Image (cartoon, rainbow, N blue to C red; front, side, top):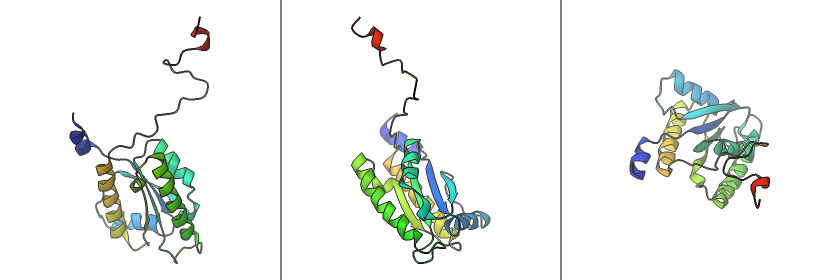
Length: 162
């Protein structure tokens, strides 16, 4: 199978961190309005986009997600005053960090959606799925070896130099 064939069959897994007050409600509105969007996103509701620690994003990517969407209230409309500005600053930091790791910054997207913007939220998901499909699978990093286990390809010390 060629790389081009793989791109056509590849279906990305996207983790979506959504604000309880706005973007999660937008996702709910999209569902109740029967607005179609790709099933590739797994939504995780958090109280606020400002509570999303960058390590949550890195953990999602290292556990097999091909992309992460962070969705919150529009700037100036946060239920926790200015926490979505915090999310914006963290997103910018993540973009720089991912680039240093050799990961395309486009794999992590920050979007704003109010509770009344179900159609917009569905469109953002569709756009992100298309963009991540074009990037291909992340495959980063290889699964870590559990502590206490020794993989078969690493020789045991007693066997080395015997």
